Length: 170
Image (cartoon, rainbow, N blue to C red; front, top):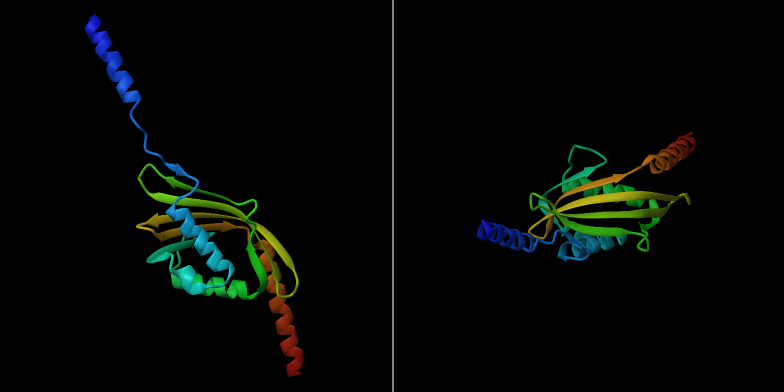
């Protein structure tokens, strides 16, 4: 009985001392890739931005429905054309890589996105990215932000442009 108890304690000791796989990372190849993609976005270097994605990447923008990489690129170009300057606040951003229970690699990013629209309106909104990596490439990206203020300014700019066009035609 004494030997059985000792054996049980030894098994418990060895199993509790087994090395756990690290699952959270402040820095990794994937976080560096996402940082490079953000820098490419901020400088409108669309070829470099696109190079970080797999051709089959699915991108979800405030939606459960994915869009293709090319559709997202078209949307980003249209959105950033409405800004004279834009970018993320790097002083208060937060990025973390996680290997989840299915051994999928995700990088999470939280930051404040600020910019000045071409009409002079200043906007700032919190943004969250959840980015999945497979073999070093982004295969899924979930983007969440409140676009209410930006859409209101874009609609006002479009209405002013339509009004100016109609008055020129008269």
